[in-house]
Length: 131
Image (tube, rainbow, N blue to C red):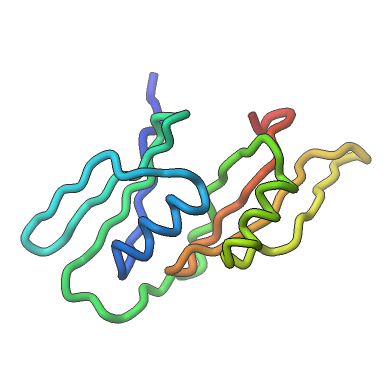
């Protein structure tokens, strides 16, 4: 059986990205591997072993074109309203909280935030299939 272990994104500024993911989601550097032309940084939560892999290509100065294929990564939290308030107070500029219904039943309560490189991140209230 396959197991999802990480999602990789290319970022311009390692320190800025590590700070964002630490502040927003409590992710910490689990490993860091520097190579001749690039560096890989693996960020992990103490609560889960799925990682966000940051790839920093040395010498890159132009922002990456995210294209129209990337959607988002999602994090589930215990208290969405409290997290939204914390993100707002930290200056992380979250979008407003929204509710998504299907057949009259609440499917998801969530907000989106963008990381320093423009990647969209969905923050969902833990409930139902999002636990």
